[in-house]
Length: 349
Image (cartoon, rainbow, N blue to C red):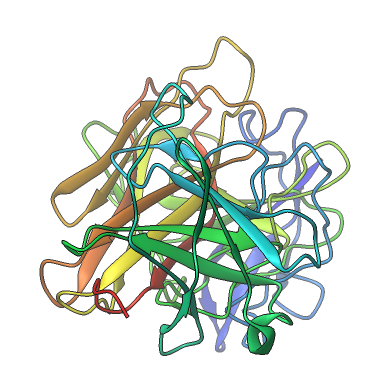
């Protein structure tokens, strides 16, 4: 099992050290030759689209945009909407409490949200039972494979759910959602990137570190036969190594990105999370919108699990931070497919 290390700049190109490791992301790598980045190495990918679609198709056990069970309710929407079949006209929406029990919200209006401009298209709701509602997709929107659905009441209480397979055509304000900026060699599984070489994501050590340098190494890992990626090719791990000595574990770190949100707009933040390493390893993830903590949870999921959160932006611009605050044991939380969809102003159509 190999890894690549992006070590710096040389004649305009970063350099990599191709190494091998006997254990995933924890043991010290053996030394290897230094080569210039090229098409076979960890080269920045200017042609990666924002959808970050890759060749790895998740197995059915991986939770994707169309969930078989409700997303984790983290102070967010209790609404889950799904198509009754892949090409069906019917969408069914369920309001659920945290324990999964249905709950009535008595929505007065339903609408679909699509497009980069968050276009809202009204739909006619039918109540099927306690907390269960149905509507027919309007003919002009039947070709959409993914979209958002909103149900609201007369006091502008709006709940939103994502529907469909793949990613909706909504505006995603996160750049490099799947950490695909660098491709990784076929013979490598881990990429260590020095601070400053990523164009969109940045890292910072939180609390104690064993490193002489205060700049953490951002650790990117690649999917493969034994390590299934959630989407695309790569994911990130929130346990670093030292820039001054790659054989030393650097401790936990936080990864952040500044995103161009607009004051007053409603956003859906979605990301995939997964436990890393043996059962005995302990991971705890805190997710922040500026200083507002959206999530603080022990990461125990052994399969990629989507977490979604609704928020109205209190101001223009926000810093989104993923902070590993569990024990520093060589295994950090795994994150992938970080998206923040702009759903427009939270008003009924």
